[in-house]
Amino acid sequence: MKIQLKRLFFLFTIIIVVVSCIASKSAKKTPEINVPKEFIVLCNNATQEELRFKIKEDIKQWKNIKTPIIARYKGNDILDYQHICFEDDKGYVYDFGSGNNSYGKYTLFENKEHYNDNPILLNKRFKIYWDWKKSEFPCCNGDYELVKAFQPSIIKLELLNYLQGRDLDGDNKEDKISFSIPNGAHCCYKITIKLSSNNTTYNYPFNMDGGYINNVDGSIPNQFKIEDIDNNGLPEIIMQIATYNGIKETIPIEWTKRYGITTNNIIIEFKNKQLMVNDYKNAL
Image (tube, rainbow, N blue to C red; front, side, top):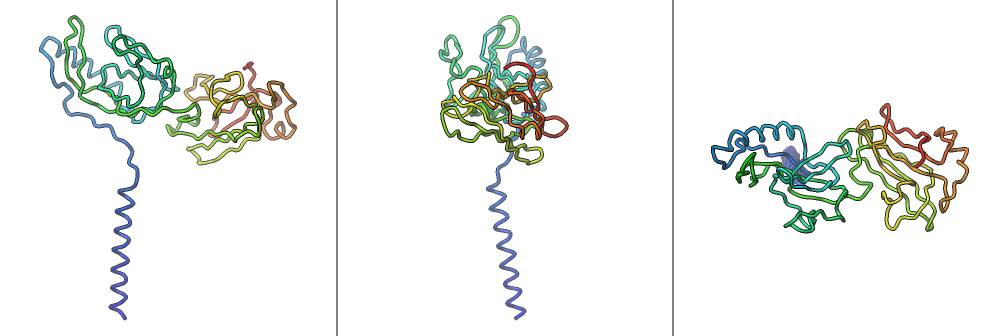
């Protein structure tokens, strides 16, 4: 009997170890930035000092930037160097102009000879995976000799819809924003928000007018938009509620009692560690 129990215990231990190994292998790892020990690969003596200064500034700028980044494509231009710029919701600009970039299926430039921006992707929001990659680019002042060095480079791009990639509570994690499917062409969308910081889901009763082809987006800004109105680094949600086919209706007394709102324009924002709903005084 004791021998059988020992065998069972031994088998049980093996099973636990195997399951743990499988789970650890299947678990998603957070992407890490591979910082090279030496950044400069090839340059002549005339440009070495300026290149080292540029790289020193690059390291300082990108030191605390994790991957992926969520930012809007702001276009490119060629002045002293080529600049390929993305801007996040906090106004921080990421320039991949010197990088060895991989855009995948997305064409940021319509014409590579003149680098005209693709108007379809301009101002669209992307999830950007980046790393330090060996790149060839002109440097520095004067003759702009081609050099080789590690530069911040796009590894992969993922196009986001208007609601994706929003960080309402400032914890650098995505908060989920979704809308229920309307019963008809103009009635009625209802918003749900799940915060990552407290893992709480907020199901709001507010009816918002329709008019969207697929899902709710920023195509009707006088009805719904996500924007950092007060420039505090966190986006706010601005909505026009209780309207039907563009006609304003009376705010239900239940909404006033629970949320304190009295107008058809509201703002949802993260304050004092919670989501708050208030009347939005400015006209949409």
